[in-house]
Structure formats: C-alpha cells, structure tokens
Length: 276
Ligand code: FAD
Ligand code: FES
Ligand code: MG
Image (cartoon, rainbow, N blue to C red; front, side, top):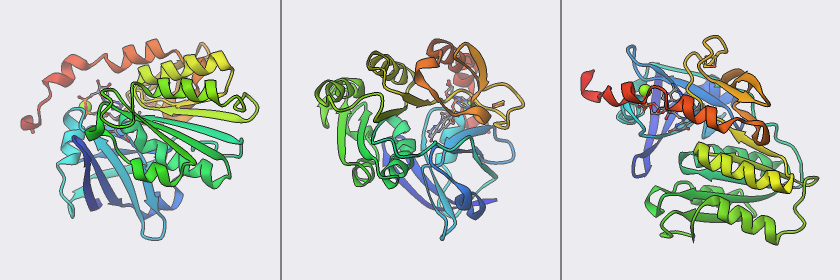
C-alpha cells in the first residue's frame, strides 16, 4: 500500500499527489516513470515521476484526468492508500553537459520537463525552457520551471499567458535568433502531445540539432513482456517501457504512435466511474 501524503490541484483537471514510496524515491532519476494501480480492481497506468525527496521518502505524480483510471486516482484523498506503485521504470534521461539544453513541455508533459530540466541545469548546462498549454488555467509548474531555467518562455493557444501560439512558434524564434545554437552544443528535449513532439522534430531536423522525445504509448505490464507499448523508431520496433521512453525524435514514426494511442477509444468512452 502506498499512502498519499499530500495532494494539490495544480490546474483545472490536473492534480499533484505525493506518495510515500521511500524505495522508489531512493532510486528515481529524471525521465523515469511509475506504474500506478489505484485499487485491487484497477488497470495499470504509467505516470511520470514528476519530483521526489530521497530523505523524506516520497515521490510526486501529476495526473491529468483523461479517462477512467486517471479520474479514479485523482479522487483519492490525502491519507488514503493506492494499491500499487511500481518503479522507477524506464531508462533515465542521459543527463550530461552539452552546453545548451532546450526543454519543451506541453500540457501535462510539463510534469516530466521539470526533473529533466533540473537535471540538465545541475549538469551545468544553459537551460532554455518552453512550456505551453491551452490557456493560463491549464498551465502548470511555471514557477518551478523558472527556478531551474536560465530563460523560460510560455505559450498558450489563446494568448491568455505568454505568447499566443504553440511552443513550436517559440522554438522557431529561438533557433532563428540564437545563431550560436548548433548541432555541436545543443540538445532539444520535448515531452507532451504527440503532434507537438512531431512538430518539434520537424523543426529541429531542418537545423540538424539532436532532439529527444519522451514517448507516451499505451503501456500494460511496463516490463517488456506484453508488447503494448511498441513504437517504430528508425524503422525498427522498440518497446518504450524498457527501451525508452526517450528516443531520437528524428527517427520516431509519430503517425503509427498516434494511431495506436487511439485504438481503444470506443471502449474507453464506455468506461464510466460509476461502473465501479
Ligand atoms: P482512458 O480513457 O483509458 O484513456 C485515455 C487515453 O489515454 C487513451 O485514448 C490512450 O491514448 C491513453 N491511455 C489509455 N490507457 C493507457 C495506458 N495504459 N498507458 C498509456 N496511455 C494510455 N499522464 C499524466 O497525466 N501524467 C503523467 O505524468 C503521465 N506520464 C506518462 C508517462 C508515460 C511513460 C506514459 C506512457 C504515459 C504517461 N501518461 C501520463 C499518460 C497516462 O498514462 C494516460 O493518460 C492514462 O493511462 C489514461 O488512463 P485513463 O484510464 O484515465 O484514460
Ligand atoms: Fe508491455 Fe512495454 S508495456 S512491453
Ligand atoms: Mg483507462
């Protein structure tokens, strides 16, 4: 059993839960995730480890209500126990000194951007972060990202905060105006909606700048056995849970990822919280 020791609503439909999990906190690294099982009847769902404290023994998950299981988890109150939390899973981000790190987080992907950007900052990189959301009410972690960034840029679809437009509009401006950023001194890292990661990959491919994306395929066992999370990278099938979740953006087949993410939509819509 994994006790929820703190709970905060960060934005409309987005909740942070701190979970007592000393063994996971001890080993957690930027870019890794856990599988959460809300109760004995629940499905397994993957969620990024958004923060952790080794001394106090907790990890943070930031959950956007997407459907049945995420709603169930965000309905848990502080003090209640989750049935299972497994991790840390996935390869950690290969944090190192590259010179310039451009981190791009969209929507709830900003949750993963925070520990990754912090890692690159601690590794003495210049960190430029771009975060984007639909509007100011769904934007999360602005202050936390600011605290680990040399420069932070905000974009919202409706212009209610920061620049009106997409994170890729901001990225294009940065790449066009900062001529010092090139393939030898810069790493781009994007996490968020598939279409956003695909657009980032297209932009950075033109500039030949290495880009990593953290992929979010459907996962079931998350231990490399079921094959649910298979993605096509460089023309080869890869299992994101054990070989990712980060991959070279310029090699990812985003079209097949999108298709596989939508494959159970009809059944997911039928699944209502009241059924349990
Ligand atoms: P459903 O109605 O069942 O599904 C809604 C949509 O979510 C589906 O159409 C599908 O595209 C996707 N989905 C459904 N089941 C799964 C599954 N088992 N695994 C992955 N995607 C699924 N979300 C967050 O809010 N915060 C995070 O930090 C976060 N981190 C993630 C890290 C990784 C490595 C991955 C792979 C996914 C992450 N997600 C995160 C996405 C999250 O797992 C899904 O939103 C969640 O599983 C949806 O479950 P549901 O029952 O609420 O919705
Ligand atoms: Fe089963 Fe990756 S989730 S192999
Ligand atoms: Mg579900």
